[in-house]
Image (cartoon, rainbow, N blue to C red; front, side):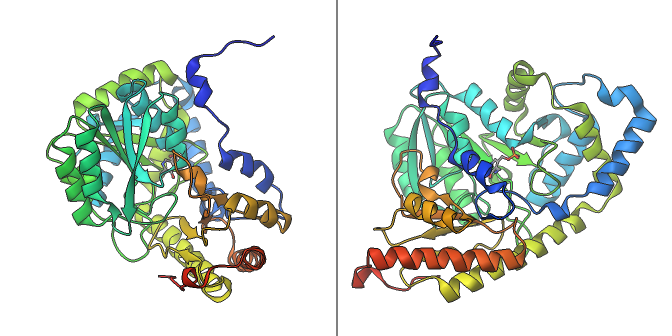
Amino acid sequence: MIIPMAERMEGVRASEIRELLKFTARSEVISFAGGLPAPELFPVREIEAAAVSALDHEGARVLQYSTTEGDPRLREIIAARMNRVRGTSRTADEVLVTAGSQQGLDLSGKIFLDAGDVVLCESPTYIGAIQALRIFQPRFIEVPTDDDGMIIEALARRLAAEPRARVIYVVPDFQNPTGRRWSTERRRALLEAAARHPVVVIEDSPYAELAFDGPPLPAIQSLDEHGQVVYLGTFSKTFCPGLRLGWVAGPKELVDKYVLVKQGADLHTSTLPQRLLQLYLDWHDFDAHIQRIRTLYHRRRNVMLEVMDRFFPPGVRYTRPQGGLFLWVELPEQLNARKLLAASLAENVAFVPGGAFYPNGGHEHTIRLNFSNMPEERIREGIRRLAQVIRNFLADAPVAETASVDARA
Ligand code: PMP
């Protein structure tokens, strides 16, 4: 029997990344596809000790239902840390613990979007946000970006032309997928443009602390004077993703709405993982742990770029991110990254075709590469193979002379 479904399901498709991850679970595959952190830096023993302590000392209490807002001590730690590291001034009751920042995206859609409303986002943008928000049937308007972030004049024009603009969604720190980071000036300019319109800015920032060359830039929320910015944070990239721990922080009136909506979604984030994280943060030097992650990713990024610089043919452009997990490749326009992927998978190398990061399609000559998950030797081997696959494709579809400028910066 065909079971009828809600109209909103029509736009819902399987994420390409998830489909790929099925394949990349095989050990022979060198995967640059997922956004997986390096598992060797997960604090396994520390989490084990926290679990033993929590169950020994608190027993059933850490297995009981708890409040929707989240563990009070954990919310305090999150607020204090965010204020210190990102320059915000939040109190614990302006923080809601969520099941990862992905849940923050889903709740944002529920709170702010009716069908036909407009979401303004970077072009390209995070595929999981497209997926989470699409179910609320908005119209996505992609705003062009450069190395410093969104082009604010373009954003301002769109805001003025779209009375149904409700959400500006941005990933300002080492963006997924491009690895780019917004300048402080752009952050300010975004707020200036947004302040003229009744829109919320969703600042999704999982990677800010993974800067290779210095402290994070101030969060957009820290510069906001109009109570217009909701910040989505996560422990997925700095602790581990499997416990599903993130947070929403913002003006209390807004966070209270997230609490209400979260109640309907899952009552609260699992009690035990919250306690494990809270004990971990109380007992250990989290800054030192993050420094180890940065050092490792920086090294892996360097290896990836070094091999790309050596073996990628002219005409292929790519970003040189100063933090995060990803870099972004633009192939000559006549190449199709989905077709390239098929050939690359035959060589046991996986990546994500970049077209998936554009809500309105196109840009099929782009790809996203993850550098955090594979050890150095596999990065070297995988990029060498990928370079060969690209060269083979180019041999079949030669680049026009004028397009083959070497623009690797
Ligand atoms: N936002 C962005 C920009 C991401 O890259 C990710 C993870 N890939 C998420 C949100 C979701 O992360 P999590 O739910 O694990 O916090």
